[in-house]
Length: 184
Ligand code: GLN
Image 1 (cartoon, rainbow, N blue to C red):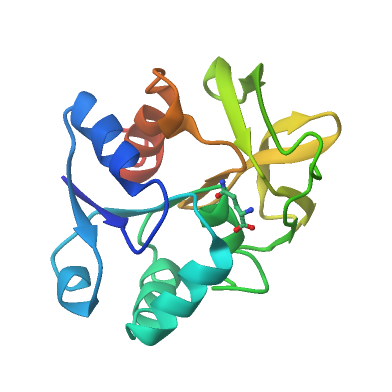
Image 2 (tube, rainbow, N blue to C red):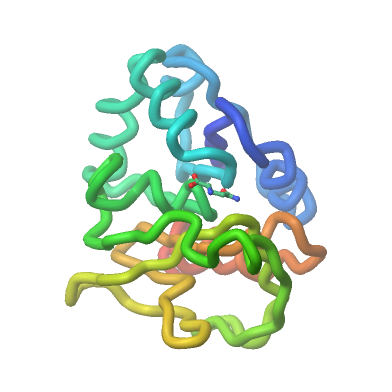
């Protein structure tokens, strides 16, 4: 198994460390040549969705990534990576998102909360979005104060928080076991 990690900007190195810790190989994607390597899944990290969006267009990655996801490539988006999959960006997931949803005061915070299919996990939010509306085909996996912060639609998994910034590898294991391997 090999997972591609979009590495244009943001917290991509932390994702490759998480995968390494659970014994999964990964490679970084910076351009179309990198992208063309065989892969079983994709991680879109946190960072700045506006910058990431501009770079995937400049690098000719927008359509190849969108098509691959629509054709079933498993994808895991964290924070800005969640935003990238919404209606206004790649548009592969039936979700509407509010960016920087926690405002300036509560811009960044940590909590421990339940995620469906996993249990209690640490959640680190950094100028995080949340999902304000989700289609019927979207399963809500975590809600915090009435706002959706983790969800799944088929082979697409998103979290508004950053599991790669904690010691806990559970969410990455969930992605690999339940989504990339399809629950085998
Ligand atoms: N605020 C960022 C955005 O709107 C997301 C922050 C993050 O990924 N930690 O893209």
